[in-house]
Image (cartoon, rainbow, N blue to C red; front, side, top):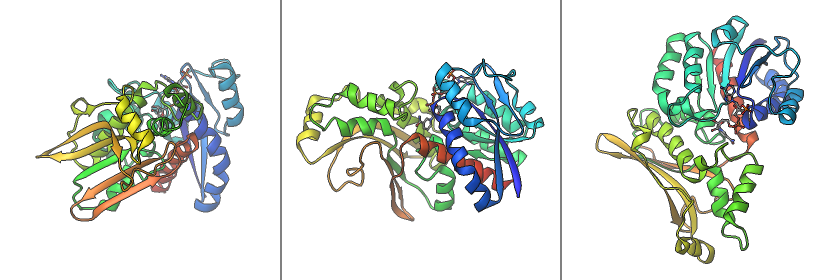
Length: 343
Ligand SMILES: NC(=O)c1ccc[n+]([C@@H]2O[C@H](COP(=O)([O-])OP(=O)(O)OC[C@H]3O[C@@H](n4cnc5c(N)ncnc54)[C@H](OP(=O)(O)O)[C@@H]3O)[C@@H](O)[C@H]2O)c1
């Protein structure tokens, strides 16, 4: 049996979902993999709670939900830097901070500092992956650590790591995807009589799948971020977010909505990444898809992605949970992979 301590930075919807899911799964991780995972530090906006004997995670989650912050929790201490966490026996760091599109901060700075001192990194925060994934992966390789990106590119769908292994040396020509659960839920609900855009968005927020700022979902930013992370890993490492052509679902023409309500076609917010000479391009836009399209049957907040490869043909993956638990499970998968790689 081996023990692997990890810390969590950011105790919002995703951070708390991870804490709760971890409580449910840690015994089976130990039984199935012989690894005792221990969440020993949670860093909130203002302070940190740390206990090498393990934290009362359900109580902490309830406290945060009741009071909005952990700062008054008995025994809180100043937030530790990643190197201080390392010296307290922690081996992995989960970042569940809000995604900052502009420069990836403060997550990116923390991610670099974590890898500098040899911690494994597991990302829910998409900012560091969007801005610097190749750099972070190189830094991790130098110190024998890993970077988990499952929760940045669709959570329940197989991750960049899995896909790289799966495709091996095969050439990937394009990626076409529905990767934003909130937008897909809204587009599906708008087909139902009497359901408004605001009702559908409120449902996604209640389910905890909407971004803290839902404009990231409905204006296509989240889809674009995920496509850029995937495309940089699989098509073109130099692709930039600034080059993405993006249209969301906030001002859908009435004609398009009527077609989706009355006809057999359905509306989807689709991201495409494809080769254009030596470079790759990403385009995000709403589209009507016909009944024979693999994205047509996606219900609720489901996601899907098709990879087109001249060598391997088309591969479509669809479904999987689009939920807080799905994201928590993806984070736990990355943590487990990191812990197993260290053995
Ligand atoms: N929701 C999903 O299904 C989903 C799926 C995959 C990935 N993600 C990503 O996961 C991340 C977290 O999403 P969420 O829904 O959990 O957001 P959230 O509820 O807003 O949680 C973010 C947490 O980070 C805390 N925080 C902000 N700045 C901080 C800092 N400098 N130091 C420490 N903590 C800080 C916030 O503190 P306060 O509570 O004090 O504001 C909040 O608790 C986002 O990047 C999102 O894109 C979300």
